[in-house]
Length: 163
Image (tube, rainbow, N blue to C red):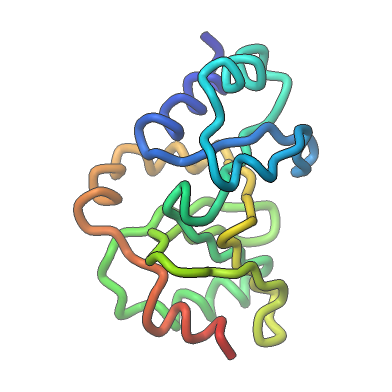
């Protein structure tokens, strides 16, 4: 079993996140149905067993997650300042330009936003996806916190994107 396939299985069955295959950060399959139904085990094996594709994580209600994509060090700093009082757990991963903050989906409709409030900060909710970076797996030892004390994308976090 390849490392990519093993990681895909952990994300899908350990955390309940839906996945899609990426090449150069773009989906390589038609993925609209993956917003409402999970990829099958056979699909996961086809996509990730041979290490041909990168792992994409489908955001939204089905995966029960929302991601804030900060595309600059300034955006990361701003987001950390805005959320410093939040005591729940969120996954984080470094990206080439900044960081993803991954929160539990609170229910309802969370729409994608690009360059929110003029900052290099995007919101990936229903109908979105992010690329899983290898450093995300450094956080997997804390996955139980995702189950017991998650940080929901609500309150000040969602209000900031509403403006």
